[in-house]
Image (cartoon, rainbow over all chains, first blue to last red):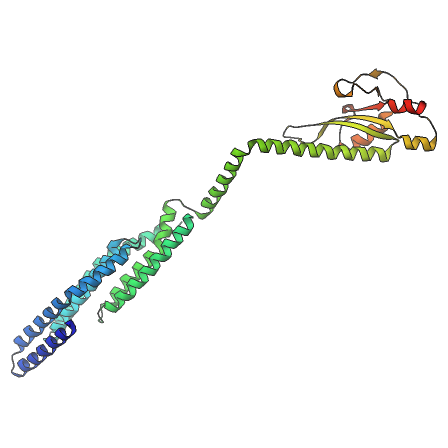
Length: 129
Length: 212
């Protein structure tokens, strides 16, 4: 049922945005698309939580440090949020701001990836005789 | 068993990691951030593959050591329970060896001289350096009676002194045997024993019978 909710919300929002754009109300069109995104995200939040929980349980069965796996989940979340923001900026015609948002996302992903990188380097150095 | 456990954990880790990674690959949004996520996932996979071996190295664990430890343990256990058995085995080996040497000397002498060997007593060195070398040989000989009957001659043997051998030999009359050089030479050449350590006696009982 969530699928129908999400699709219908999306279609209604699209129609609204098109109408608003035709009546030269671009600022409202932007707000509508923003709110639509947030609403859809709220609907799927439960499902995402379930999926992430399952993945966490799976990864706890391994001997690999759990922090590495949660780092990857964080990175995926960051990728989604950055994409969300960047697309809204692009919709508003602000390509420069969109690419700045993406730059920020990339930098933060790299920062999160650094511990994994360091751990990997440590491993390689340790395993050398 | 530790090796099997190790391999089992390792393969399990790799399998789970790849399942997770394939799920994550689907979830990742299709924009230009995907390659960064892929890079981090690649790191994670490499860590999953390498890290068990690093643990092994840190614990100074090696397959060889483990295997040899098992073997040595087994041997030690065996030794503990079979200490008596080991000394018994040594004694048996010594007995067999001496038996072989006696057999050899008997054959040698009966082939190359007129006498037949009735009894041999051998003592061997038991120290580390020349273990198994012959220390002393005592031979008790008899005239080869068959040969004598065929030839119909009587060997005259000088009798210098009569020694009564103690213990097990005391039932026999034995003479220190003068024409023993031949026999001594044979033995000392073959077994590398100095002549002083070879004593040859002649059993006179046989002679008496021939005389009578």
